[in-house]
Image (cartoon, rainbow, N blue to C red):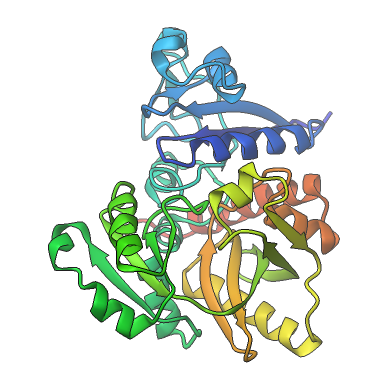
Length: 365
């Protein structure tokens, strides 16, 4: 009998994307090959407490929102140096279980930005998705776009502003440089949280105030008239690109509401109806973008195809959604890799990268 690998599904988190993480985790748990993997739930509540056992299950089922409502015996602590079993049950000071690999399904800050990845690396536990650098660069839209520009990857015009200079942010100057409408976004967030389409001075001021609730650094982007195209990338050293998908939204843009709340908020067209040469250009640019940001394992690459036929890479998402209507798994399904097999490949890529990194010398003799 083949021994099952123990996979920790890490979900929840403190970010504004907590609920999306739970939706993604449910889908992964439902689809993972139970004959090959043993699933352990690792939940993080909205206050940042780590949970296992029944408390993690309650969090997954949304029966609790904070640790005060959970069993104290389900609290976890992190003990670096205990390779493979660095998560410790605080109630009995014993190891929860040795983990073969962790699948982080965390979206946004404190989960997708390299923080958790660094912790797992210290614990010497393989984990799905990009490492510390790729995760951090992929989370910060400002740094990401600068890496794109350095790699000659086309991006739209943008400016960056900070909360400490709020009083000096000049609407007229920015509108002259980028044109109207424009988009204001938290630099380190996803799922369209805190994003605003701006056409007037009043909307600009209101958007700044709201977006600064989520991040101290904002990115202001020019509006590109055209089509929104997405590509899924899979792999480590030799990444592959999926077929392309197009988002046709019924809203001003692909907002949080359009993504998750309004069933008719957007139409996802897979594969996208594009000329073959345009498709190949976008797929190649997606792989180059993946590599420019130092990604590994997986990423979803979002781009715009302007009405003039120009391609602009918008961003990479290093932990894309895995909900029932998320583009990443749907694009690979259309490319011939069903959901369960995709999860399997991602886990194997995590183990492959971990083994490769562990072959490196750690001392000089």
